[in-house]
Amino acid sequence: MTRDLGALEQVLEQLQASADPAIANLFDRGAPLLLTRAPGRLDVMGGFADYSGSLALEIPIVEAAFVAVQEHSEPSVRVVSLGFGAEAGKVRSAVFPLVELREQMRSHAAAREYFQRDPTQAWTAYVAGIIAALQVDLGQQLRSGLSILVASNVPEGKGVSSSAALEVATMAALTALYGLEVEPVRAALLCQRVENLVVGAPCGAMDQMTSMCGVEGQLLPVVCQPAELQSCFPVPPGLAVWGIDSGLRHQVSGADYTEVRVAAFMGYAMIARSLGLRINPAADPAASPGAIVIIDDVYRGYLANVTPAVFERDYRDLLPESLRGADFLREFTGTTDTITRVLPESSYRVRAATAHPIYEHRRAAEFRQLMQRPRAHESGQRLGSLMFEAHESYRACGLGSTGTDRIVELVQDAGPGRGLYGAKITGGGSGGTVAVLGRVAAERAIAEIITEYASETGHTPYLFRGSSPGAAAFGVARVSWREASWRVDKAGPRASIAVGKAMS
Image (cartoon, rainbow, N blue to C red):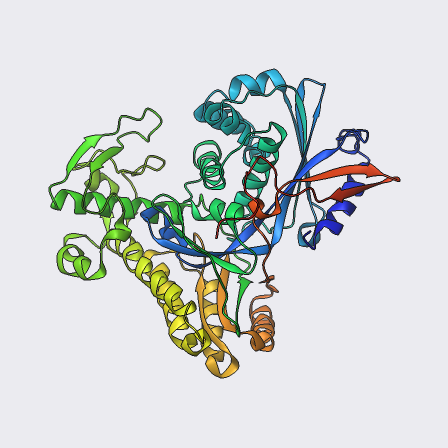
């Protein structure tokens, strides 16, 4: 049982007390609900380099999304979203005709168009969009109407994967409802496809992988080629990680993230051409216009497989610091990234964006090695240096922000003398949350940084601390109405994720 189940029971009771009959009567009290839970994640190392094949080191956070589902006889799918904890007060709802969903979820492209018709309902793509994966990828048609409740306290727009938590919890709930056995890694990758192809956000795989497969208190290493889980390991005794929210909203679909991602794929195409690799038009009809396929037995399609030494010797001077999309497109029809496209009018930082995953992969590998050593706390300053280097690389790519830079600066000012070793912007950058590494006893220094930042900016940061299990470890619970209130009975892992504990 996780500590937030008590709060969830209160949410269910508040649901029933709603003045809106459509919300109050979402569930039939005479039938049980299936309940799943998926946490957000804190990106410790690896960050947005996941789409270039980097090693990513992620930890599941305490904040999580719950999804409760129940079948009903009406020909509709009803979705209600409620926040709790720090996200309390947010209420959203939508109703979809069952026949319409069955028709519009026939492909990811059709589903994307369907959910984008009404901007006020775009949020439903993270939840109801999973139905597209159910139908297209798993061959499971909706057999009846559904009631779906989403209750989340993962703060939105802070770079801690609130969207992945929704997708993963919904995937776990719906596959459990239909008795589908889906291995956790595959389930996570299907959720990523929903975010890429239905929501339209070009994220890598690390968010959904952590939300699904994460282990409480442990760093989850994922080599994103595309998603190889490696052995989890605990945060070493004496050390702790925190997340400090900058107050600047992060969006994975924002122009900065997308431009840097595109620039990295542009750099890869230029490297491939210099090697004489065969470049063909993409055959996938769902790919972006002009997408290409590179036959690559050297780096297997991932920049992270280029070593820093080879990059410096053979490729750095080959790549322009900046390149207009139109100039690139005169020589290439597009890139190997099937979910983004090169815009002729945009200018791209090709060299910095290409260098980042090459160096970040090695930084993450060294970070993991040091964290797994006996007496890892004695390597705190080197661990911190690796984080500061990663942060500077984000900035070189154009993904920094005044708020995150200031938090990192405050951590540097406090330094090892106050028990703080390192800090870096996380996830897609351009705002969001800063990950901080330090000694367990450095809580006072963290509090002072929050106070100082609040006095300078007027924003009191949200502090992410602690960890919780991923969706696979939580499994599926039954919720039933007993003695005038809802009660959650932990039923253990179910066929939906088909493992007893997350992989480690």
